[in-house]
Length: 422
Image 1 (spheres, rainbow, N blue to C red):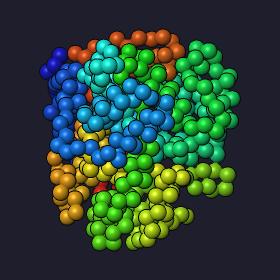
Image 2 (cartoon, helix red, strand yellow):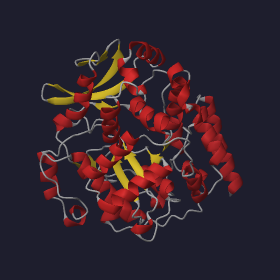
Image 3 (cartoon, one colour):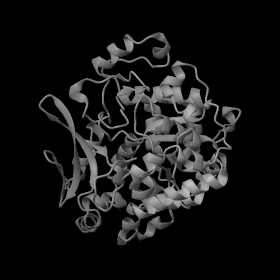
Image 4 (tube, one colour):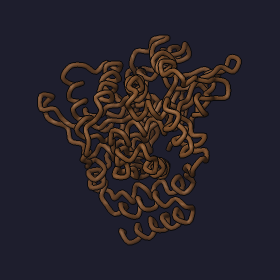
């Protein structure tokens, strides 16, 4: 059985290498024969070499407070984040996830042990969900995702709108009110005009915590965390990010390494429809198709971050998390390709040498699908009271083989090619 699995997995590896997806191929080649539990332990092992910036810890604190986490529990989570510095960054922010994302969170959290009492502290599996996407993203972040009869929560004029800092619309409130109790009892109260991301994160955490039988899952909006961090450090003229955005010499070197790379996303109105545009560094401005932000005064950008919906893009987020604060970011098949590309480019910049970012692990593959009988949507599982029976002895290669077609059809960034985060 294992020999047959090896042959099938190595066939996938061969095809990936031929397609130029060498990092993904290597991750699979090196780890396919580990059990899920063994691989989860490997993923969750990390010893950062430098302290976490106080500004980033405060940013995590603020996001947890926004989500209603307080007291000893919040302190325990913050201590775990500070100590472990391991973050799952594969999922997009939505109320319910796909079978693959459920498998990712099962795999990632498998080796993260809970403590028996809160007074002992404890380790937490933290999921930094990415909200810098439109509601039309293929993860369907504005829906209750089911195998059939998916439930749309957002009106048509917001389908291409930005999830980040979005508000609960009338359609969501009315739709939830009409849902049968077997679904609605698992959803938080939906209040018109309140934060959609908070509502979605609470929903996702409750559903997946119930399915995985874990009390140490923490779902948060990683874009909110990075925004708050930026709003703090950009006030410090000695900070590297302040110099990237506001020092002409450093900014020029950065732009040469990352030409046309999105630094932020911002929502814009096209008639009655909300859409998203990328903001890139261009000389002394952040430039989108319709919006510009002057970088001659740092207070302008800081105000946009604090008061608006200027959302940190992938590169900006990973500079803050992985490369300045040494987070081991777990990700799916696209991330293990593009994050090392970011790393290689940043490591060549003169002003980044002191951070020794070449030592940060960036190809940390978490993906897979359970065997077919277990591959149901989390929402379907919770509605039908279906139990997850998968054990940790299954080989990682088996989880990968169940999504062979997805792996072979995946795409990722080259230097400037369009890419999907996952």
